[in-house]
Image 1 (cartoon, rainbow, N blue to C red):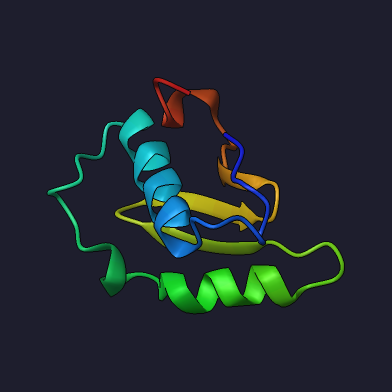
Image 2 (image 1 turned 180 degrees about the vertical axis):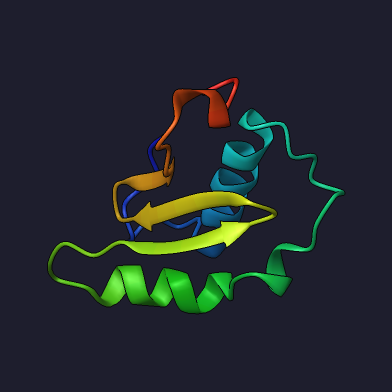
Length: 86
């Protein structure tokens, strides 16, 4: 998946949508967790936007490890069977 550039007009809402869509591809329903319990999306967006180099932030939501960078949201997969729909 690919997120819009940091200077896009959508801002954090685009990042929220992309994180949720990524989790849904791994079978996690959006009503099964509270995103704000795991990550401050506003702070994450500011961090990504303020970086002038390569940056990636990793965190886990309900057992699904994610990596968020200016290039998008990816599932960290060591075993291809971890994320069925990826």
